[in-house]
Amino acid sequence: MTRDPRAAAMTEAELMEYVRSAVKDLGLLAYHAHDGRRSWGPGFPDLVIVGRGGCIWRECKTEAGSLSPEQRQWGDTLKRAGQNWRIWRPRDRLDGSIGRELANVAAIQTELFSA
Picture 1 (cartoon, rainbow, N blue to C red):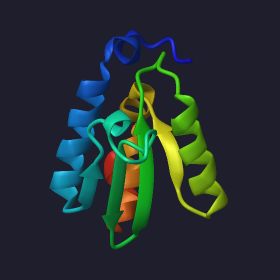
Picture 2 (picture 1 turned 45 degrees about the vertical axis):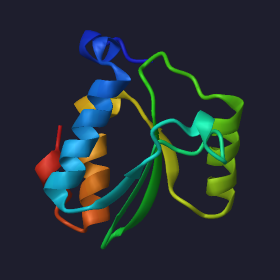
Picture 3 (picture 1 turned 45 degrees about the horizontal axis):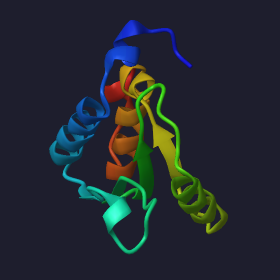
């Protein structure tokens, strides 16, 4: 876990807002599962993001947040199926990882998102 106080203080809502804005700015398509606990498939990833460079599945968590058993099952199953699934945390925003991944999905130069 990171020791950066900015990451520790960032809420999941703040992280999601950053991603929403970046997705919009890059012209990507995205679906946000607002509350998977009330849908047919509990644990469904928070985000499915698609662009010219591919499709990614992301679960957003705070620095201290943990996956539910259903979220872990979705992630494991997606990875076994060859899909690009992972967890995004505030440290991934701060070090530029999220921006670089989104740039790859958009098929643009990732140098724009260097930390």
